[in-house]
Image 1 (cartoon, rainbow, N blue to C red):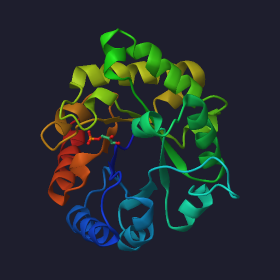
Image 2 (cartoon, rainbow, N blue to C red; image 1 turned 180 degrees about the vertical axis):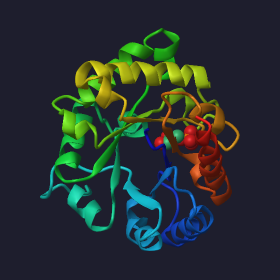
Image 3 (tube, helix red, strand yellow; image 1 turned 60 degrees about the vertical axis):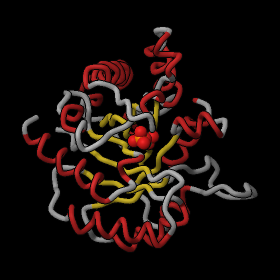
Length: 257
Ligand code: 13P
């Protein structure tokens, strides 16, 4: 069975002091959760300090982005090896905000995924359609392109180290989450693409997270869906109480799955 993964993407929020306080609170309250993988993705400036807080706990560290080269004259960029050295296990790649504001494309996403895997980081690769794409019935075309191009040249062994995050852009930060049926439909579609490329058995092992306005009061119905293996949480991961609520409710809900 796939172990669900709940990751908090703090985006461009939290100073070092605030990050230490938040991660300490989360650690205290979630120490006994063992059926959910918990990941915190603070901004780069807080990675080292959050890493110290969560060392030897049930919480892993993730970064929000990285560059596809491993070192050199790339002012302002961060290399995968640097992330590993501060304790990162995961790295979010191709978040829709990076696609929208920083010119990331399926091709750059693919380059980053390949480098991350080569350097020993586990990519959380984000895919998702925009509102106008959903409204013009292009959801499945967009998702298919994001998944196939993002995973170009990724082999069977490598895909097992990856997590896919389905984040419909219209649900991010809007308070309007995809319904469990809408999300499940796309998650199943993604799993079918994976099955065609890697075989049924491997596709059943890959975790597909949902992201977009996840809150303590909607996580249960989402995570109970067959192909929804956790959540990538933005706004609600910035408050101890709501992130803890999401993880605890997930932990209970998956016992009945
Ligand atoms: P919200 O949970 O704030 O909608 O953000 C989702 C997201 O983008 C996580 O990566």
